Image (tube, rainbow, N blue to C red; front, side, top):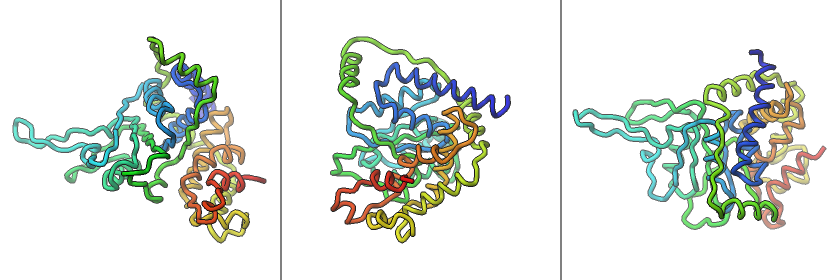
Length: 318
């Protein structure tokens, strides 16, 4: 099958995935699209939203439609690194045997990641970066594909360990889930307060996902699109010559990984829209999710109530 035929098939599978998830998830179309973008790009997502917005259900449904193994880790203050990576035990023959932890799944939901100490956060983020874990000097490879979807409650911050900027940078997307509309909430209440189950069909398997990830990476990207992405990221950094009226609100800007993720995300966005090469519109489409957690606002922004999204939207203006 040629790359063009694979990209055409990807669009069909993408639409089928959205339809299957729509059987269970009401609304949240942008969040679902962002999860699928991250999946086909091979990146990880941080989901930011108040309780009750179906974050866990969304991730669980996604895993079922993909036919992938799924595990949920409830992050708590007493969670240790070995609780997620696994540990060695003595078997009956008095030999050490490695017992895999919940990280050994293709889709991992890290629930309330900011409630666990930095040591455990670091163990998860190392696995995200390297796609492997090391226990007692032995390295174990994680399954492929491997997708971590972490959730964070933006309201309650007592007893939490906020992720440092360097660790946040490991996440490709920072996706914000908003409240449903009135009509969507009515539909949610009707759908969830009666005894019924919505079965979702398996649309893709692991090997097909890996093939789609590979063909997306082979998509050609024009030089002007790469230069646009790099200029956009550079404009988020203090003392940049561009958008000086916005620079006064920024303490720290995005690093080179943001430029990489912009191009990777733009490729996937273009592919899912039926295009064979991305343009600057595809870069803009993924810019907020890629840059949102990589820009640090200063005192002036907080005092004037200027949000990170407002800064990004201003930078995206022609």
